[in-house]
Length: 367
Ligand code: ATP
Figure 1 (cartoon, rainbow, N blue to C red):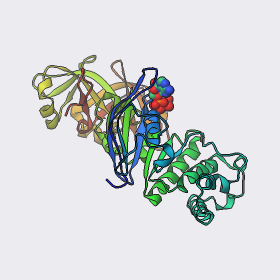
Figure 2 (figure 1 turned 90 degrees about the vertical axis):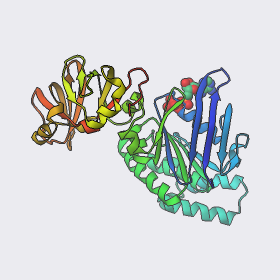
Figure 3 (figure 1 turned 60 degrees about the horizontal axis):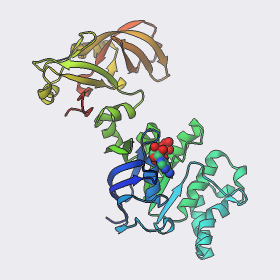
Figure 4 (figure 1 turned 45 degrees about the vertical axis):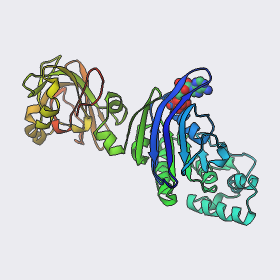
């Protein structure tokens, strides 16, 4: 696979015996934007650092551009890494920060100049080439850090939470710039973040990790619509998926909420896939996006409408988040009504076509 990156059964056990990454497997094609995502401590930085060569691989194989590189030094791996704390050289100008790694590699100065000017042009840094880092904004500094990576013409860019030091607004605009940069360079990006919004907006494929294990690898839409298990369902998407405990009736027609006895009619497809769960407990999940309060939806989804009390409503301009109670369970609806909602109870229509069921024991989505 030309210019691809392959991890085969990669494990990391730190010298103190801590097993940080278990059997990581992925084949990354040239030009993909892979986002490694998961809560703090899940092993995403360790994985990135193993690809970079900053951390030894305990077992398994790392292949870059058809070559096993487990024992190849970082500088010889055709990769460039951008860190969170971009670590620019304070005493050097923007130009020299970008040129530095090429200078120490003794590359021809004419070639260096051409590469720095090209990167500066791509990143909009030409007006700042003579400035020192302290004379730049946070976003501009982050662009210089990207520039230092670009001039090296790597096969793979590795980025470790590169936007986490920026404020929310700047993060948004840098996200867009990163997407454009990725398109323009047509190079593989492997990006680490704990922010699932970054993952959903940037990735061609997301890898969700937990406790050192890969939980799911999928494109953003698939990850959102078809989460592999309860963990992914809760991690991807804000607010998270609503999860309710209940039982499938023996005739496979209804899901009954244990605490209230409220019944939701299953779709034909759900009756089929839930065959072996007749009379058994399951977890029901529905995203706040598929909960409605308008008259038309209430009529359309009359077999899966639930009356709930409302704790409070967050008015967010384009939509409202309604925090309700399904029995004692918190239940969130993300509704497009633009007016503030002032009632204390309401009927909520659930689109059962978009609902999921999860196995209580394995936590896997039933399909
Ligand atoms: P964060 O978002 O907090 O950076 P992460 O998912 O990137 O988290 P890693 O930095 O990869 O997590 O760490 C994974 C696990 O390995 C953590 O439990 C961490 O404590 C442990 N770990 C990291 N470095 C070492 C080390 N040198 N020795 C032992 N354990 C380590």
